[in-house]
Image 1 (cartoon, rainbow, N blue to C red):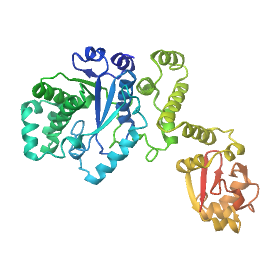
Image 2 (image 1 turned 90 degrees about the horizontal axis):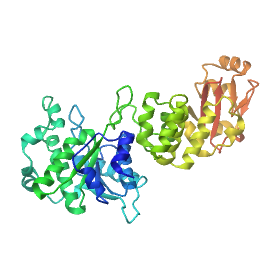
Image 3 (image 1 turned 30 degrees about the horizontal axis):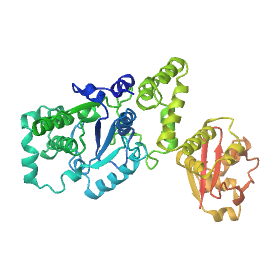
Image 4 (image 1 turned 120 degrees about the vertical axis):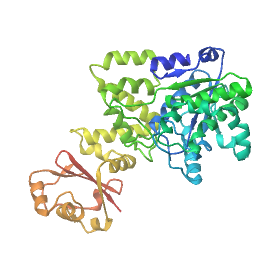
Length: 425
């Protein structure tokens, strides 16, 4: 796999410095991407950069994940219209530790030929005082050079603190340290990082008389112009603590058709030939099939094969009009937990079932599924109420403990579209 060619056909190449293609063709190269722990986990926007490192490693090169233990304390002004709110050191350290654990899922840290490396840039600064920083780091780059960067120019009128102004110095010095410690000659990142990355190549040129390179990807945006980001509403996390496997899977199924070509090429690990064949067959006539393939591939990779199967089972139960009682009974506890997260759910005490719970009491008194017992009687008469996929034929029907699924759940339906879960404690 030729790394640059791979980025080109995927539409993942935004810019590069001259000479990087020749450098990559010489043999194994070391390259890095930095990740600041300003959020508690990682997003799909971060995953674009993880894909970049994945493709870099699959091309035979060695990736470095640089965790921003230092830069996270400063705040990157790139792409932001106003000053970031600084996080506490404890929060940043917790975020960093958790993000580092997530990284181990996506890159190969075992292969001796080009195993991935994790480094923390706090190691470069923890023994450096302010005077050392000003002499060793601040002296290398002029204010004029820094002011010319887009990340600075777009903020200078609105206000830019010295703290954020200095961010590019730290990222530039990071690159110099990795160049010296690991012979790292390539830094990659999103297009908004171009100024910070090229500051690093300038550090290496001026201070070490060395040659280093930059590669950037386009930022991940949607067809409506909105973007993914840690602080954007409706963000998609690659972590079940913040985005459930079901919600993650459903995002890809319901994505805008206009976004589909970009999403496929950015996120699939299929070959160019496979992708082009799938696009030729399905992109125009059956885009939903492509969405399903992408949703399955990503959900299995981000979560697990078992989680994917649970998601598919839940999706079938919730959206397939022909889903039946047997399918509900076949779901494991993990799948039912997933349903609880997606449907309106009610907690009731188990002792209510010990004495039998009348269906009308449940609907009107212990939930807000229906407003009154009169509404409940009419719904039952119209054959609208189901318990665990069985129609309730009489308003004298009672719920009992032996109806619990996995000793915890009961599904209630009111008509074809209104589904609820009872969680019994």
